[in-house]
Length: 238
Image 1 (tube, rainbow, N blue to C red):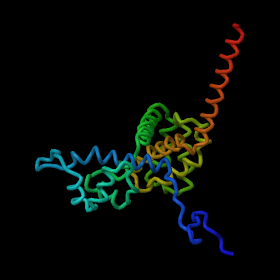
Image 2 (tube, rainbow, N blue to C red; image 1 turned 120 degrees about the horizontal axis):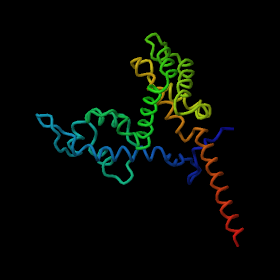
Image 3 (cartoon, one colour; image 1 turned 120 degrees about the vertical axis):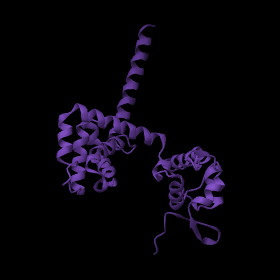
Image 4 (cartoon, rainbow, N blue to C red; image 1 turned 180 degrees about the horizontal axis):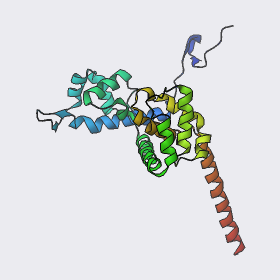
């Protein structure tokens, strides 16, 4: 017996065709951000001989970036733009002199990044233990950047910041994932402490973080208790 793929469904004649998968909410937000970023940047993205910006149409960008006019037109004008090809994203980013990630990061991504910068600065100036630990570990030129060391130090550093030990415990696996996704070995030693704080803030604010889920559940229970108390108070006045 041949196992049936869960991604196939019967068509007329008994043939099976791929099911249409729904786009994930993250994909939809990211593609929408990609479109909005292009719409903001492209009209001002050309430069004159003096280095000042001048207008440029998406048709001109298509030619200079090597992306087909049909594809770029869909990215710029469609109500629901299609899945952008990674190579096209990179070609456009290179032509616009923008890191590819900057075309894809949502407002929530930027907020978490800026929060991490503030958290790092507060920890750096207000906690000698944090400063000493970073200097002796990830900021050391001899740091080997082994995965087990990165995971350990990312969680230790996160626990010394305003993120808090409870959040770090609950989001430990997500912190490990985000930390290992960073090219820590290729970063200057003095930037690695900030990188791991970014990892901790991004991880603990992730929808997959157990800490956030528990906080939301706690808040919901608290609101229910408050509503119940208000109901009881009104009932006692009758």
